[in-house]
Length: 430
Image 1: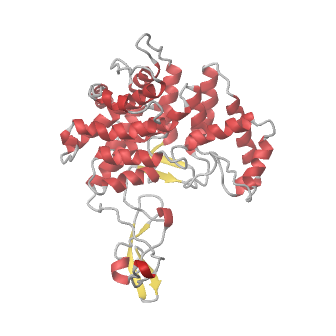
Image 2 (image 1 turned 135 degrees about the vertical axis):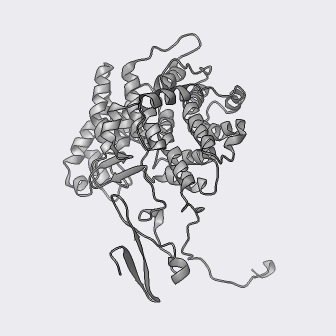
Image 3 (image 1 turned 120 degrees about the vertical axis):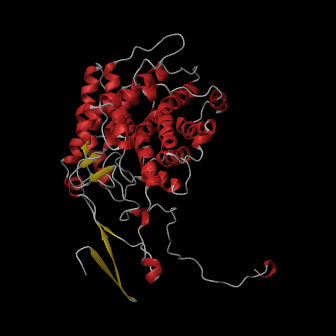
């Protein structure tokens, strides 16, 4: 056998297969012919050890705490470029030059309006509807106004669909929020940048415009970039799974939003805030008692915002936010007791052998909710903000999947553990 092959020993004999080379990180064992040649399937709940595609978008080294987008470190791009620049990078594989960025910004800003008939769509939802439910529904709904997006086949049609989603998502999100608080919808203003426009639609009223604070703009820009893509997470895998059936970009992204809404995924930052608030409000709760509860295997309590499925080192996004959170609050002349509790929890956990040995470090959710809260966003909007940030990653993965000749419709196998064949028993004999 060559150095690029692998052998799996089975009762029926060996299975020899190719080892697929990665540019960096884990190599892959090709098992595409395992079942037809041997009758065996691999068993991998949650696909924790299964690569579903070859990708050149994002690379994570969990042990080193490294996150790269198209080769660029997250620490560099989060603090130095705009969210739309990162979107361009994820979609097209490079950072734009000045001319490309100007054209990209202008293209996005000129497509921020929703079709006026969409007003009745928002009006039809009850006021209590969660903004995430409205966001996902509206994402699918806007495609109905453009027949070409239903089954795009040409590159320019796909590019136009990506532009439309990126341009209109802040408008959809802001209108979902306005609906939830009973205020009039605010139309986009193309004189603003992408992030400024979103803040304008979120917090302005027809009677008065919101002064746009550059501190808030910078903070939100960083937060969106930190959420832009994270490899084959649950929602991204969902986008690829739905898209593998040749469902269009809008339907696939809407499905990804459904996956993101789960409390173990995009809803985790809200869960962190709720837990910090509970600690703050409980007179009997202390930092040490909270740590002890988290260590007690007989206690169902779970310390939210610590640990990660991929990172066995400090989440690099959390490193950016840990330094950024206090800076944002200081520059906004604000204090937040929940940030103080969070910092004390982090210090206590990092000094405790239980957390250190299990590599349970703070993740991005631990600080993002605190900053979202400081910027004035209600908790119901936290996952929506995550979705806006993750949007370019979802689109990039859909586009990559759409162009990959290896793409097949997702159809996982199972290990059947139910009843074997049984004789039918008539109703009167049961």
